[in-house]
Length: 379
Ligand SMILES: C[S@@+](CC[C@H](N)C(=O)[O-])C[C@H]1O[C@@H](n2cnc3c(N)ncnc32)[C@H](O)[C@@H]1O
View: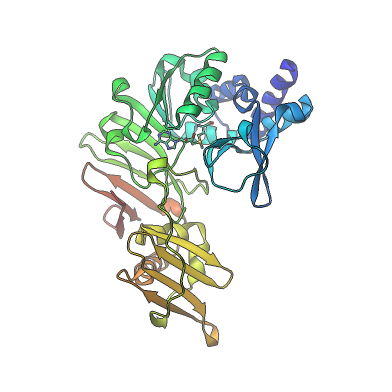
């Protein structure tokens, strides 16, 4: 088993290198040594239609199990708080923890630009796999990791210790950081946030970095590395990667009000609502209406604001255009349309044209330059 797992780890490293995800030999060594089977046993979920089907180690042959474990795939390990090992059968629901696909683990860590001697705070220990990749690279004394879910945190601690490492593991809300280990050279989040928590700014050294995905209630996502300047402003540009993580639990969406297609006030749209279905258009829409959710059908874009109950929905109009109906105190479509028009006027560039500036008081995402069009992130 050990030989097979070791050879599958080498094959995984080769695949990640061939695809350009793994460029640095020190990270390659970490991937070749981190035993993912330890972190995925005894069970994980695989998608099955609209459900999550538990896959148990003892139901599969060793070879099949290991080939799944070393696939460059995210394996969901918890759905709505139920661990795969405890699932009575396939479940419908929302993933609440997973082992992230190894190519994304190394993409984030390479992007963070970690060097020998760096002290790093990881947010979202999850299974513990990425924590152990970090320990292989930096040594466990320099690795701190926070997990919100106490059951997952305990399981991860056992597995990380079984892999031979004793980093500082914290059970709690990673949005508070971990001040006892500060100042960090880098903070890396494996869950996404709606805005950067202040504690992360306070616990980072000057010149330190925050690598995270910025997401929100429309579930659009952007990957960014921010660098802390001497004036206390963290700035950076989005990378343009089309990847996302599950939202940090305290930033999750509240329950959505029922979708009712109110006639509301009606007009023709000025931009094509389908722009919202593109990676960057989706992100722009989320910037413009941060407390709205997006519900799409084949011929309609529906926005529902969970804070005010405001709604907007589009429908095809005769002659090839679209009509929008808006209802409630927030003119959701006006907001989204204005932002989409600004982005279109700039040539509809991909996400790497956007950047972010974060201080204690304000967080803005800008287009082009910090002085360009900008949107505030929710506090
Ligand atoms: C995508 S998984 C992490 C993957 C993990 N790094 C791995 O390699 O297995 C995201 C994790 O973030 C955790 N999480 C969510 N919100 C959190 C928070 N506020 N603080 C710490 N952990 C959080 C979830 O419970 C989940 O385990």
